[in-house]
Length: 132
Image (cartoon, rainbow, N blue to C red; front, side, top):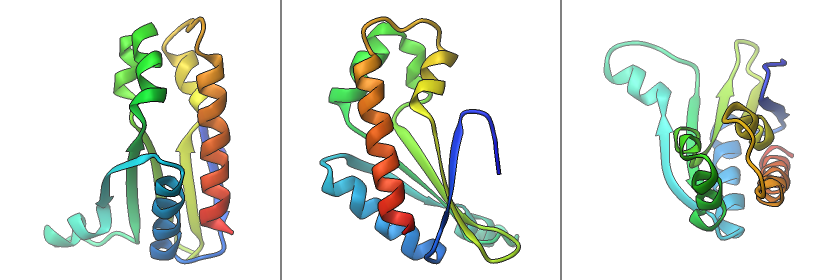
């Protein structure tokens, strides 16, 4: 699955375990989990069905604020988010926005590439920890 700006990886765990592992990996790195949204549960509340689909919203103001100081529009994409879902073949997937793609979306962001690199490294590490 290839969507521009989205990094996607298959998980060897079920959706709940993948999300639990992701939340633990994020927290272990000192990043704050702000919300965990269960889209399937919300669908069930209105009488609809949806395969397991959860969104984790997490961030660190020390990393995100410099990006928003350079381009306040980054606030639409921050804090970071990761989606875990189960497809029609019962495969679990984890996806997140590529921080460099987010930055490019908001124009030239001088002086923040070190922050973006750190975000990219952290996201790859927590995704691998959650999915393997």
